[in-house]
Amino acid sequence: MLVTLIPMFDENMVVKAYSIFTQKKNNFLNPMMLGTGRNDGITQVAGLELLELMGIETLAQGTEVFIDVNNISIFADLAEQCHAPHERLVLLMDNSVKPDEMYVKRLKELKAQGYKLAIRKLGVAEFEPYREILSLMDYVILNHKKFDITKAKIYFEKVYPNVSLIACNVNDAEIMETLKADGGYKLYEGDFYRVPMTKGTHEVAPLKANYIELLNIVNDEEFELTAAADIIGRDTALIIDLLKIVNRMSRNGEITSIRHAAAMLGQKELHKWINTAVVARLYADKPSEVTRLSLIRAKFAENLAPIFELAGRSQEVFLMGLFSVLDVILEKPMEEALEVVQVSKEVRKALLNNEGVFAEIKNFMAAYENADWQEIDRQMVLKEVDHDPVYKAFTDALVWYRELARV
Image 1 (tube, rainbow, N blue to C red):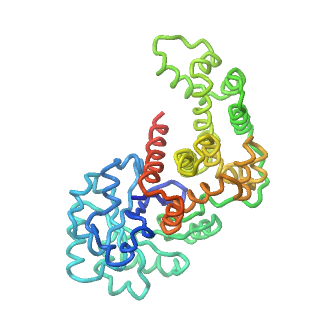
Image 2 (cartoon, helix red, strand yellow):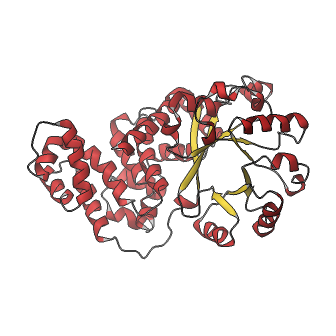
Image 3 (tube, helix red, strand yellow):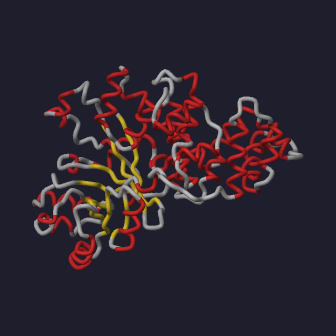
């Protein structure tokens, strides 16, 4: 099975929900999945299976989770498949669920069990026939390109006042700002929060300059602990984070200085910690999802390295993932952003020109994030890799991030 998460934001760029997108089999290796075989095991909802296996907090800390169901799986015993709190699960259906009595009855049952409901892929002409179903919905997802939000807002406020609208396919920040100004949508989904910068006039803020200097020091092959410790000493938050880690390692020892704490952690562990903790601080004034995206990309890339025959360069691909949104963070074009940090030539080629030995893994991750399963399946066939190691690479990155967020 393959799985990825798509975030949904409110107008303040706070993540309020995730959609889980899954694929059970490689369709290139299992062509029946494109025909009648697609109904095999259809009553098992992959998103619920994943939640039950990993726990809802690993996938989506404190947020709602949208789970795809269809016109068959909606009749399954969903509560038995996943024991996560029903109020955090939003069952997402499309127009394959018809406005017939049996579906209306089933949706009422699910609402009574505490589940939330959402629907997508409805055209304007279907709103009236779907009146009874729409009245049960908590969310309706609209492709903003196909709907006039002014008219939709008036219609839904009048006919379905309890329904929240979600704009999908919001692919740049300018569109996001326009939709926010018009009002009507509660949540937004799309690539707007990670669109590369094409121009920038922003200087690096003083505190960020410290973080970048620290990153450059520890990513030098022969960095000195004392130099890193001295920069850490300029930031209270970093000092506290470092001491928390060291205190867990040596409960009976006294820490006499920041240099002492850095020495106790050691060069290897200090390198790992700085490349995660410092990046989180560097991204602190951006949407939390950007930080999360950067860190999960980094660990996912590192985990994928052996599959792409790059095991010996896993730390480089980690940095490639980590800095893949550096242009968004520093509000500069990627070429200018990469002048600020020290990265290898291969990392630079991949991030700047999508070239070199790391480009393939970068493109794979991009397709994976967007749930482009057809492209992922194609690449996996070429590499003679099945779903299991890729699934593990991604879910291990999620677990790693969850543990990191707890520090």
